[in-house]
Length: 324
Image (cartoon, rainbow, N blue to C red; front, top):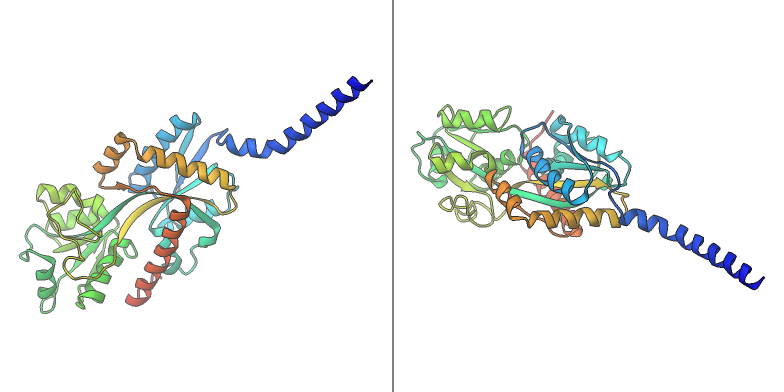
């Protein structure tokens, strides 16, 4: 009788323990099904390329299918608004860029709030780059600014409200106090073609869009907006060196998840992406497209995004930019 009762008690205790452990075990086992990387932009752009590089490695690491789904439109707002409503279980990861931070001020109705998300990890970054046409007479950005004080110049970008546009507006209007009119294009490609063909004298683009053109001499590298000179373009000075502000402007790519996600899941995503970013093959792939790996803790990622929202908001208000 005693043995029988003991057995029943033991079985009940084990069952209770199993119930207590089930949620934790399920979280630790993430992922147990396909994961979707919802890219906020069309195929072929930096966010898409980086999502595919990291997604392939996550596929191998997790032994689960990682699907890249492009959902472009409204400068990244459509994908972000949809991802904000996804189940907070880690199986939908928003892949967005610095547009995530910019749109909070630039868009009247972005469709999401920063509080809807937690940044899992900042994956990679590239500085913005001001370039000149091959026929540009001025040799430096300082020369360009002096010319702009008396002659009319124009600069192109991939579009209004992009971080290269905001960087150029800050440098020209706020720091140098010159008015160089902006000519928005439908993307970095058309803007690059215009400056390579000397149809416009200047352009401001993400470095990844122009690094090869500068290296080949098709365009002139005038200034990068990084803290220090970048190894890929060692002869191009920083805007800081030229006395044009202390800000470090960049175009970055990050993974975001719905805010209510369990800590164990977001921490696993963060840890695994960080491990992937240490892979030399991945670093080489990023370098080829002009991006540098970032990584770091989840807390660092959240803090960085909050700072970017404030910084770009201040710049947008200062230059009086409005997207209708």
